[in-house]
Amino acid sequence: MENILMQAEMEMETAIENMEKRFTSIRAGRANPQMLDGIMIDYYGSPTPLKSLATISVPEARQLCIKPFDRSSIGTIEKAIYESNIGITPNNNGEMIILNIPALTEETRRNYVKQAKEYAEDCKIVLRNIRQDANNDIKKLEISEDDIKSGQDDVQELINKYNKIVDEKFKVKETELMSV
Image (cartoon, rainbow, N blue to C red; front, side, top):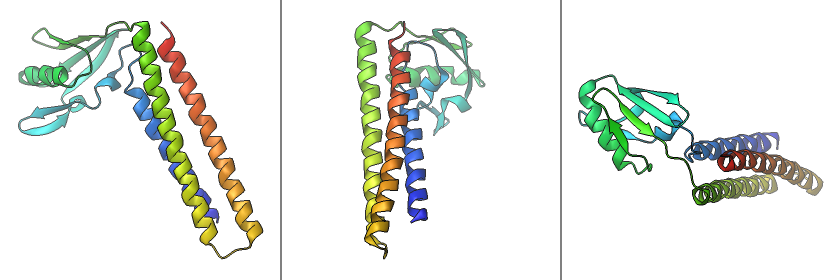
């Protein structure tokens, strides 16, 4: 039964990490190099992540500078950013690409909070599925009814703990998104 609980806890940790990764894709009006993590560049015929082709820096709170290692790839990088639908138009000055992050409107902030809430709810659904699997695994064990009940109580304590973590992380993200 100890193995089942450890497995469930590891899966719950993974669910939390995935939620946090999804949270980073929601921009908060500040420049963050992680906004560009999903962008792939067609570099000599093979898709390559942007961060392996250029240095990404944050010179100001709402600006990203992308300086390619190979200056000839600047047009391809600019095109990939434009086509990625991140809502930012790249400016190319011949040496680097500058992304100016626009300030968020109140409505946009609320929409981002809704999106973060969806991610948190998705995570809770995953946690419930993990609880269900763990409870089913415990029922399959050849142990007494009291031990089964005890094991299920332990799984419930785990899910309560992780649901609280999800709620706390969502509150932090919500505060970050709503602060001007």
